[in-house]
Length: 117
Length: 117
Image (cartoon, rainbow over all chains, first blue to last red; front, side, top):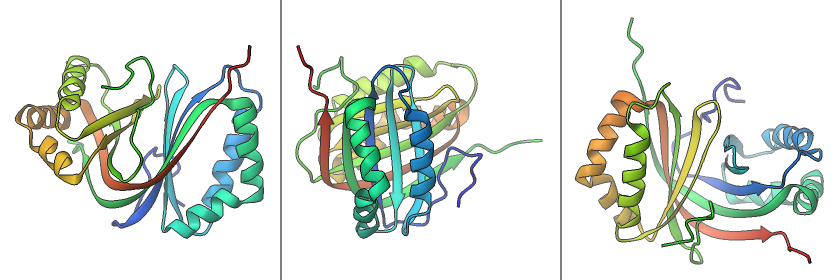
């Protein structure tokens, strides 16, 4: 498990895989918040799960990038029974639209401001 | 150019490439808004640029996924002189931390709710 206080995922060196989930939510919660938390907890226990980063703007457009060790772990999570149920509810109630892209991360770099004093 | 009213990028079928930029902003604008718009406009004119999606939460944590035809176009944009200047200012004034991951998109799928009536 990574540092739950930071929005940044703690990831190994590439290569690894990412599922980019871009979505626009329907107005209202309709049980979304509870389910999203349950799915996040469940995903974090899947084999091959490496971490997740998520940002949601005021306009309801959000991006969640989840990181995985390999493609098999992504496919297994997509087929998980509880997750399949959430996917169905998502299409029925929560999302106006979503786009999913699966990619292989080839390289990475980072910056962190030095804290002086 | 894609539909500027939609937060979703209009992308071709994979394969293509993505630069995932996750960041936490420093408090205050400090000229960020103007520069971000200029860089978005400039990026959109680069060879190989396919589109961008971006979400910024209330906590200052944001994700921008920009999409490119190939790795050469990503490297060229990273080396663009105006963009290099923005990168330096970003590290000096705008970002507490950022993480960049470059990946090859292998597959994609989508959902859009049917509008009835």
